[in-house]
Every structure is written in C-alpha cells, then in structure tokens.
Image 1 (tube, helix red, strand yellow):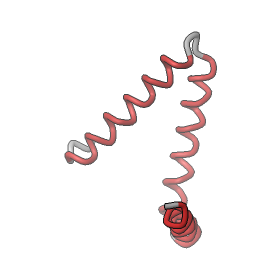
Image 2 (cartoon, rainbow, N blue to C red):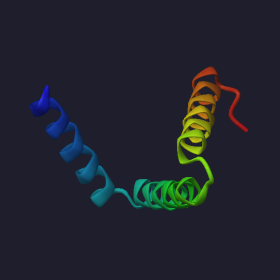
Image 3 (cartoon, helix red, strand yellow):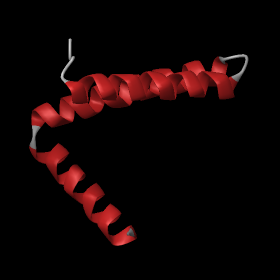
Length: 70
C-alpha cells in the first residue's frame, strides 16, 4: 500500500513538473487549501469549521462527478 502511494505521489510530482497547466491548477488548489486552513484555525469552533469545509469539498466533488460543473 505504501509503495503504491509513493508511486502515485511521484507520478503527480512529475506531471506537475512537466505540465504548466497542471502546475497552475496545483498552485490554485494550494492557495485555496491555505485560505480554508486559515479560516478553520480562526474559527470559534475549529472542529465545526473543519466539518463544514469537508462537506463543501465533498459536495463540489459530487457535482464534478455528476457533471453539474459550472
């Protein structure tokens, strides 16, 4: 299991290094994740805020998989 996860991480790193579009998407994802992490850490109830963030991410993924992409 660990071997396959390592290979997956290396494959993703190679793709990011080769493809400027993938690199731009990864940078935007990192910015979004950083903003969300900051919002969670500043929340009065961080556990609740983390749950909300997980729910939003799950809903976005479901929309993309169904093809309801905007």
